Figure (cartoon, helix red, strand yellow):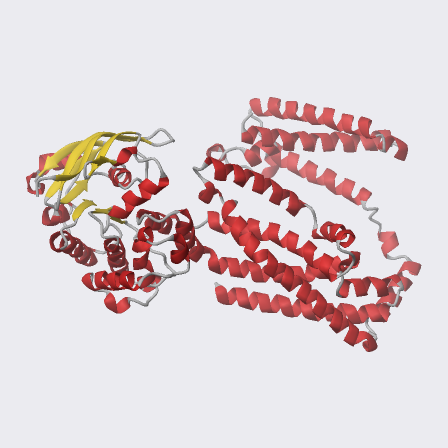
Length: 257
Length: 343
């Protein structure tokens, strides 16, 4: 539980339009933890996650993933290999709407599959068995052959979790996974993330908005403000003073149950 | 010079030059010889164009909005403008006068004449023609049907050949696909230029070119339609690709997919239905175009039409027009039903 799977050192990201989204972010992620990142919209949370799997290219700094600096990776091949080792789920699920649930989950195997085979849809039986296993794990195996856009938001997010798990990731990134779900579904999805974290031992890094969820699920929390880390530690130690510091003067905590 | 200012200057310059030229023509009343003196005419137009650009610049710097400024200024500038009735604005009168001048020149140029339209002899000729058209000669119906089948298949084959080519080219000419890779970006620009050039040459002209190349007949017509279809479909397909939502692309990329896999899994499912819809519509357009192309030797019903028209055999022409109308109507109906179902 103590060796860091990910060490981020002095990470900077400036977008081409001049926005300085990350201003020297440093922190460690320990193996097997459920790390939650909180902060206002625009505080750099999404940018941070996308730098970790190189959907965005960091401007400077180090991202040591299992000891290797993934910020330095240059060729598309190396970056794809990195992404394959890191699963990600998104606020808007980012599934392929016209494909079936199984078709969407198999996308997680694209990194292992040759271009020709994947374009022809020739996934191995092992791949399909894996996909079904993870669909079962997130409790949605009965929807295997239904089109993804026929599902509710919560079900779509569970398909997205299964897709990420099919990659056999060492780390799972979750970018505001429950922000477009209703409060009841929200807990279902968070419970599956915890299950993934505890039963499969996959390290989870999750962006969240609601502090009540953070206290319930996080083993550790990091707060970003204006692209800098302003808090790091136990979620239960975030009192009102810290809350105002992170979210600004006059902010009020909202509870969801 | 930035985009909006350049566009403003061109529009204001052209409208001013048109205005000056029209007034000059009325005052000077040049002879045909004088009108054909291109260097002088072009010179006058160019000078008044430049004066127009200058006038536009002066007016706008004085805070008087010209038509070009009003049309091309950025949205945040537009938002500042107070609402006024058009006749209380400069650009309103600018637009009004511009259209008025164009209208007058147009009437003059097309030799618009109510007298010709109501002329006795001409009217008699037209009524003879209509009488022929409305009493079709059904004995040539089998030949007409035979020929229109040729036309429909000319259009079908042209569309079929164009689909795979346009499909591949569309990704290479979509901005969001080529972004961030210098080599792809270079290919994108060259491809765009070639496609724009191809598209700006009418299918009719392509038919003339190919009828010299492969000989008069349906093959020349098919090739002409194919070239034109490739260029048009690629543009339409590429616009679809540029409008896909980024979510699925991000999702697929996050799994470690390569470029081809990303296109196939994230973009293609989003564009496939509009693709089919556009393609059906293109076939429909191609059937109509194939008829016209036949007029210049592209084979099919068009070639038959031009033969009978040349001999003023209006009853036979009437039969052919009837057959064309039926087929075009049926294609139009079928394609609209198919496209409706695909939505």
